[in-house]
Length: 78
Length: 352
Image 1 (cartoon, rainbow over the protein chains, first blue to last red):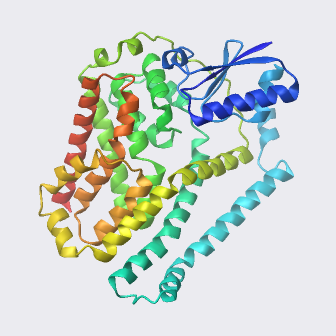
Image 2 (image 1 turned 120 degrees about the vertical axis):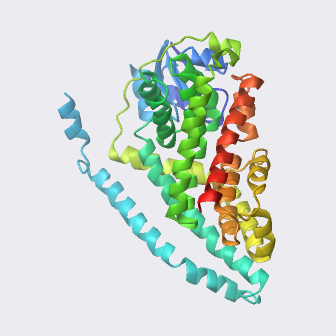
Image 3 (image 1 turned 180 degrees about the horizontal axis):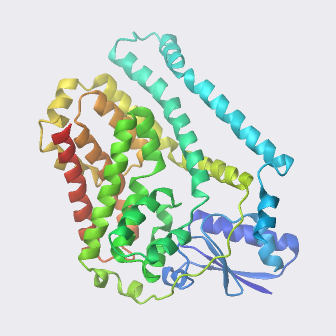
């Protein structure tokens, strides 16, 4: 089970990012838990400067803008 | 290793890369063909209506029919180009460049990077905290936050296309100057203790993101995404702005406007700033109005001050920033930037 956090204050892109990750995980059959982190202090604690951010198993893999689905697949496979 | 990855991603390496680049060039040629036909198109539109082209209504309609496609096309081109440029930058990279810098040089660098770094106001708070907690000085962070919305590709591209390169260049130079000097002053005032307390307590440091490898095709796609996103968002503002401009163009008498916004009316500069702050529009909506005002004899300094106040000092942005800044710090921010804009307005009316 991969522990995934989507960092973002609740903007449209953050929701879209969470949906993309979920869709990609379903496609690849990777079990995941997705949690949306919306608290500014918590987001800042991960050291990013732009949102949405993606954290997989405690490691920041992406910050700023929608991720590419190829990249999501690569992160989920790692 | 790096050599291998370069050859792998070289442009033209795959047939699909060639297709994308060829498609982009074809689209640019088509763009310039259509753009060159806009004047005949607007004359044709007015000729379709039973309105006399020399009448107030005729002038308003022709302004609207010419400016709407012109502005939308220019905007699309500029946003596409800037989307490609921005794919080379990110807030995290900008932060890394700024963190090592002292005030002064840092302010100038921050204002410059504010133009090319992808930034949206919904991301202003994470960016602010991300910068400050990673050791970017407060004043340098402000230089970035002032420059990023004010001196942007939409403002510069539209000014260039509608009003001319001299005004665009002037706006660029003075917009940067306001961002640099305001940020420097805020830094000198040492107001770190006026940040909200929880912001001061975050000491996360910066993370290193794994580098994203972008091919030429990825960058073209980034440009297209930017067009969808930005043009898709601002077009109603543009239509509204052009409609306002058309009304000014067709109906507001020149002598009245010269009286109110001409260079002899010294009080018009502060009035423009005070009116501009609560008004919220983006560059795309305000520039058609600017064009119409200038054509009717308004003074350049007054118009620039109005435009900067509308774009740089907006109520919604202050409400977002209120989450991290105390009211006192926001007041200082508005005061310093507002004074800078006033100075630009007066300087211009005196010089030109």
